[in-house]
Length: 120
Length: 414
Image 1 (cartoon, rainbow over the protein chains, first blue to last red):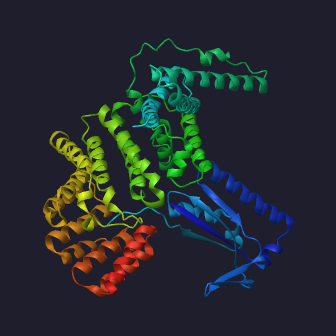
Image 2 (cartoon, rainbow over the protein chains, first blue to last red; image 1 turned 135 degrees about the vertical axis):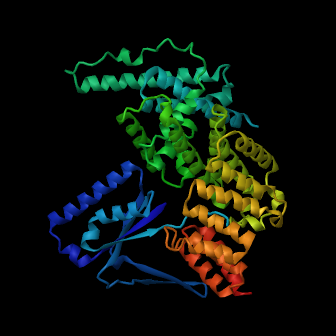
């Protein structure tokens, strides 16, 4: 099963961390990625740029309308994601619990849809 | 058949034998496995152009041995450089060939390898990956594509499994008799997982995953040849054949799922059905009964019915009763509920489902999907609609979701 771990951050409180604390967070993340790569569970992941870089695309009457934003004001924002392939949901939540952002803000674990299916 | 397919089939057949020969001669399962992959690659490039050598197995063993000894030499040279003071065995001790090629062609190596690759110390994902590479002779890229993960992810799973085997010093031999039956169950389960992985996704853009289905069948055939008297091996092979026989009819051209009752039975593969029925019939008369044989027997009853109405549901129910006694688990009960509904009516089936509501399956989409079908059968339209929608929300499979949503809209519009 593949799961996406959505990483939520509070930009203000992340900025409030000392450099040492921030380096600690990055080191923890690197270590987890390394470990998941070695276990063959890491599928991929990226961080998202700040929401000030966001565009919204809507097509109305076949005309694309592109606007800046939304510039999210919410305290907790989606900051990145990673995708893991693991045996159980329990294992995915275990990984999420070790991600430093779970301590500072929150991680959301969502199952990904698969192309496999059984006829009924 | 093209030369390419002939070569490929031959290489896959020979892969475990060549690996067995190298491991017996040199030890070093992990390095031998890499060397065999290189030898297979070399063969797949040379043979189609230059023709298959007279003794392809010997050719592969020679090339594999050369790669392996090169590798071991450079490895021990590297170690000597890094650790000049350490006294080590001269490199020749690793690489001197034992004069044992008089040994008869060791077909049992395939079985020994399967036991090793499906060792309980490895995770299921590693067991599957290593089995496909070391026994099946598939490349890491092919396995990664079949499991829809990046090649680096799959490479890691394989190398971790090999490290584990090395670290645990697992011997290259058949497990001792008292454990053998239990270890064989693990091997069969791994083959079954490979089969289902391919079978459940072998349509539309993911057609190449059907490779997994044929690979699982090929490996099950090999195990059946080596252990012809084991009823469960025959049962598993029969189950795979009888299930795979329905593959041409189980999906529409666009990949959407067709339920058993609506499949065009003219498209079922009658050769596979005949072979599967013969296998399971023979096993049931000769061997102690087991779960794979019972599941194969159930598949056989479905496959032998010319129309859905001809299905002998009483027979199926009797088989599920036996299966539930032999291997009680909620999934078996769920399937038995369908048989109960077909024999005694949907209300009786729904009563069986109620026994699952407090169990591990509570809220599971398959429970809700079966409930929906039985409620629809019972004419309880509103309840069925709710159950279909609940099931559609909970499944993590796109084709199943589309199927369940279609059933729901059909019912809503009726």
